[in-house]
Image (tube, rainbow, N blue to C red):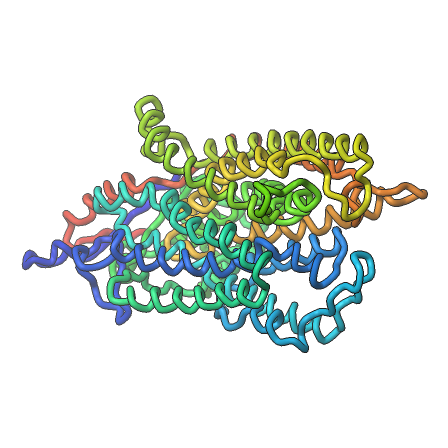
Length: 574
């Protein structure tokens, strides 16, 4: 793995030693004092924003499949696909956008509400106007919430200085506690808001997330004086594209054996611009052609080694990204088919209370919160004694444990569904609206284990893509995390539609019908279990060959060496 050279101007001995060392600045681009900015104090405002924003998002997403079924009168496949298509869009929207609207309008104005059912099986479809307004509101939300996702967690992690030992230690646990904190907002949505939507009304149930959203923006703005900001370093897409174009146009040029003859900017240049310089690595040698000195010196013809290495770091993560698509598809079942299963089961707790089906998603949150605490406070310190790794185990090992759990979860879901169908047949409960005499807590294991798996897969995934992305491309790295969720949800829509259509051919009944009591979701879950297993095998191959970037210790070693040299004596490379 390549070394990262950090060159910064030495501050005067007049009390400025408290300034941050990682190049962060305030909103006006001025150096900032470590003691007055950043760390958990600044993160508390960012986390507070995310708690309320997640409450708003999941206040809509968690129960959406039931709203589409009961109020918009959509079938199993259509409602599930519309949820996953929307969630996919949320996670795939560009990095700009503002959370400028809410679904509140479409469920509160009488003229925009879909007509009620005359009888259970006699429901008029929503009009084109009602459907259009509702989905327009949803997709405006997608643009807004997707606009914050690649940036907000990156901004939170940037509040810790890698070059200050205590802050660096906190940063290693940041994503654990980041996920822990924001899931409190999710837990509120998965319990209280869902109960309001099911038992009081959708107008209030969607109005409360709107208020939560307003609070989130205010909390974020209050923390503005405490934030640390990274200096803008230009478009990462442009920098990557320049390397790809330069390498492609010189595809016939041989790469020299000595990397020192490749084009690189001087250390003084990086010192003045307060950027990291990255040494050459032997991986992806084709891209090194972008640094071969031949012909014109335009940015699209000749790129410095550091720019090439940044591109390598982003490219080498792509195989790992691909292996996260199927896991994201599995996660998509929690908000769609898992909830639909719950509508067919006995939800009563005592004579006067029924559990809303979507409330089972609260167990995903609860078990994730519990497992994060256990993992961070007990498992990591224990593993650290044997592995000597500050994180206990590597990020890819942590992710692999979660992927293995996904296989187990889908097997358990398959067995639970077979039990549900067996009881339905035994009691002749095969009508579309029949309630099967089996407790809804039959589904608890698959929800609970998904929460534990999220602690391994999702936390490791966002930390991995952030940690392994080069400086100046951290938001792009985090967008890999959001993209994996987006593509996984789109893939879920594709697989559900394809399997539904194929299994109906040649006069067969099909696996996925509007009447779940005569469907075969058990077959579909078994299919997802097989896909998850094959994906796990692919992941093991890909992760074994992955080489991590230089860690912060390497950065600090180089920084200490370079700070002993006056800037005027800094050596220049070719």
